[in-house]
Length: 329
Ligand code: MG
Image 1 (cartoon, helix red, strand yellow):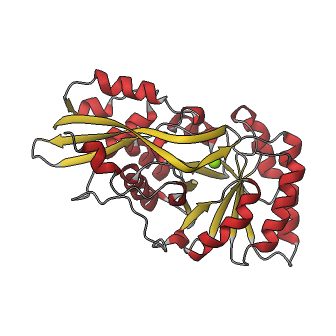
Image 2: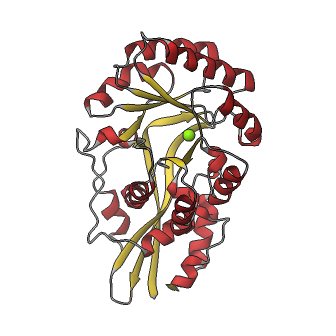
């Protein structure tokens, strides 16, 4: 099959800048692409890299798009190199795009099926003020970033948080690789103790990426020493890393970010071959990549874990940004 290929870079500003152990993030930049096949069927795709997480940079993705001719083939799409995983995702999902029309990204409130999604809380003390709004919108699983401030401080906020959150809540703690070995032990020990405390009815579902990617063996060891589950995220940013961690014995949870992991068809193959425990998660993409990512999550999720796409409250509801992006075609 041959496709007419067009692309447009985009920028979206976060309502509140996103703070993780990697620093502050204010503007989401990416590329929307459009493939029109010989029957005039249109497919949309999105390239939404996060280079500090292990994908290509936006510049590398733009360079790749710019050097392509106006007409490409399936062969072009399925031979995108592994160094460009966000491009692999964007082109392949455009190639397999199924929606008849594109619906504009506007999140109704309450969000439909929010109970299947995990909502990201703001980091630090702000979490204490925001969970309730999200609870009212239907969310029951929350993620809170740790490793952002001093651990003593965070443990104090955590203490307040677990006494405030309702009983049926599940809480995920995401360190983005920002803990030391001692701090990771302290967090895991604290969570194990909570599990044993009948007065705390909420569930700490897992701690995500406690240590940096280089300390995989220590995380493997920690995952065997504590009852609290560990999920790896930064360690498995791309398909190659996913396979490597599996081969080295990881049987904990794998966080998969479809937007940067690489080829959807190869991801399907991997997940079907090895029945891994997965959590699917957002890369702060627009509705285009989200649609493709949610389709993969629905196909490949195991164990009914909430998927990490509860991030609408981080963007303004710009119903017109998409038309604005393409109206000059
Ligand atoms: Mg994470």
